[in-house]
View (spheres, rainbow, N blue to C red):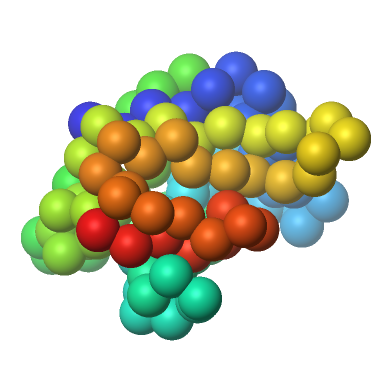
Length: 108
């Protein structure tokens, strides 16, 4: 399962509003090759389930994850920080053996 913190959900709602898209859109969460640690997280708005997707709903927000990405993301929580140490989404991923300093990439 993948979860989202209340603060991250609030920020997603704000971004959807700014983009002019409705609440029927959820987040597509993916893992792609790249970044200084080998794998990077990717977030996009989506409103369609694709074949093979794992779909989770948390805090009233749907999260779409393709099966390959889910292997890296099982048990992850998506959070949002606006503190002095950096602003933006961050992933609390129990599967990551190492992460880069910016927190945007990881390795297993």
